[in-house]
Length: 400
Image (cartoon, rainbow, N blue to C red; front, top):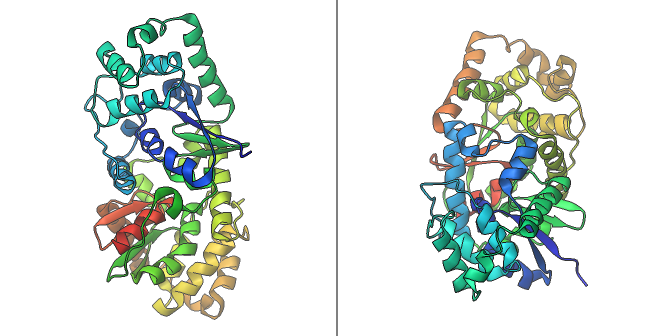
């Protein structure tokens, strides 16, 4: 018998709502049963030192992207999504009602729909009553139990268990001993292809431009870079590589210099495993750099100083050296080896004022178009996607 996949959720998370709409499909596809696990996300955030309203902690560019990202996934899943003007809303009573009703999936779906489609007041007894009644329960009998000590303790215990498991956000899936975070990691949790889990249809090739904003300092940019050429070939897109100084972008936007270091330990541990998963999924080597964080100003200037026809080879070798071979790609001796016969000519140029200005201008251009991290993918100069984990959406945009 296939072990169940645990689905940890709180109604206050739009991504948990989105994930909930694909669970029945994933169960039918894989034969795996999903065990629904309510938790109080606010309690998880307090334990991790995470802000209760994450959107308020993001730069305007990142907040705008993440807001749009929710609606892109809703479109992929073919489900409605409306942002409540009162978000985030208190959901503790709705979660207790869910427990008191025996974690009935009809109740779970009803509360998610009330929050993210109907924008009902989740603190209103009328909302709880309507959801429970529609699911076939005696609403008053269920609601009479939501303040019972046993129900309160059940929710606290479940939240504590989520914290012990390393969960730091919603939705979270636990399969065996492995933790997966986000509706976009369901293909890992269910061990199936993204196209199967997310029902991504086949598109058609067209005349599109795909710009890739990258910095050698980002492990995510390395992972994404290994797939860019194949993606362009599949879709017929013209690929344009855009080197940027990620630290310069962070400084301009007022973001921390090393976002990874600002995360909770649970989130850092998770993302290290997540990078390994993506590398294994794409069959590419990966080793988190012992030289991280790295100042890649000199490395990026070398890239720009090369003749255009030699940049691809240098970029690929440098990314691999940094994130597969654990070499210090900011060291001049390493750069000489990577540059080969062009080393003397290129290194003689890296302090040229015009070359310095070229990198500054490239970085500012990235900020101007909305880039806030790497890798960033821009389709036809207007549709921006962030992260190696958004290549599914990038491909969809290129073949729509």
